[in-house]
Length: 159
Length: 159
Image (cartoon, rainbow over all chains, first blue to last red; front, side):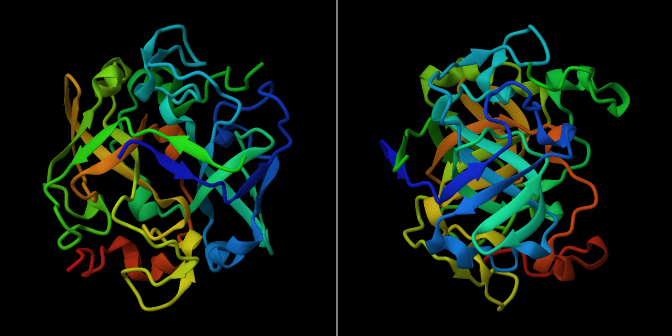
């Protein structure tokens, strides 16, 4: 398989109009609300998603035109492999976020825990299932030293 | 943005050659090992991923040619929206799995907690970060009744 063609199923609307002020992960700024605007033909796909507290959004990093193999993450100056960091400048430019569902109205899904920029093309929504997606005994490589005793680092907003 | 073109970065090799016997989620059958074979040009992207216990794999459901808007999940006969279930027969056919990293050797990443079929095109690898990807207070919609008191349902292997 040489290439795969995808078609966005909608667009993500966010109060973040530029990279500045976006948290590195939405979980670190819980009060901001954004929404997915789904194309009309997919509205029935949302049935029963409102019974879940969280969703997984897969989307396209449309502002990124670089495809790096290594990179320095926001939290430190050490170089890591692109598959060991969450940078958008990665092969295929697919973004992944866990978000908190607030409400669903027709073709709109409102959510918090936002780390996505305005106008981002949406590729998929999946229900976040704790039995599948949460893990115990997780070791998080170079990140663990930044979250000593579960403490959130000072530097989590892009400025 | 009308369409997006992706290029697989490698292929997933799995002992599961057909749907039969695949667990609905890899977490339910922990002893099976599979591996990612990454294209040579991406090998440096794996640097430091071996310091993580888990990874997120994004891949293409290449065996699925249906794009449904609703569907019946494996665990029950009720119809739900495609964005409230994890079926491969979904718009854009992107698969998502959390897997347990066993070891990395050159361009190969060996893992357990496998729910992926042999020959699957790989789109991305991300480090699983507990501070970003695990959530407390999760409500899992129609699935919660199948996991009463955290019990794994009898029917988790596709036969």
